Image (cartoon, rainbow, N blue to C red; front, side, top):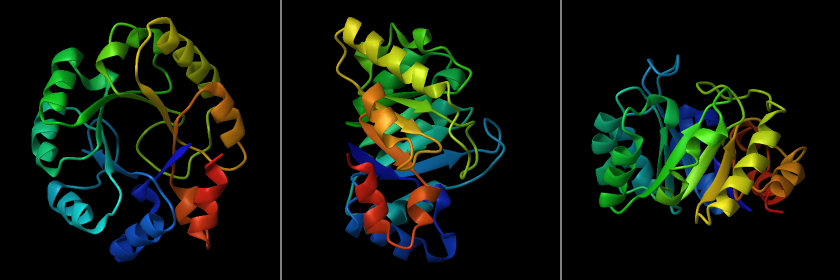
Length: 213
């Protein structure tokens, strides 16, 4: 299991120290939620902040675009060369074209589905992505509870991936902790995004290790 701490739950007054703590604590990716105040009711990070994070982080960046004008933001953040760039199924008019554009920058493209979205809608795109991010909470804010039916979606998605012989990982974001990580792993996830569970812990290393099962 790979672990990607979400800096949405970090203390922004001490962001450098927060990032260093999870990098040194054994995290595999640094999950960054970019929000535009339109697609979700919240605002977060611009390219200047991400540039600074890229200079601090010793682990790859995992950029999740929660935005409406997706193609604009892809072009805006592509120069930072994150490992993954995730775009929402719900916000892309021409999803295949957007994913191809991301890959053209040497970035692994990923697609995200919200809790209400049907995983079957990803069937024809699975062979064109390196990762699917399943939102197990409604996007926009941290410290939410895991939505139980997300586990069924993850299992169905895993079966779809196998049926189409696709080579893509499953990432889950929202309400992840040591209480449900075993169920999520059994369901087929490869990457666990956790925000408040990690950044709310006194011992970040132990919190991260508890998810690496």
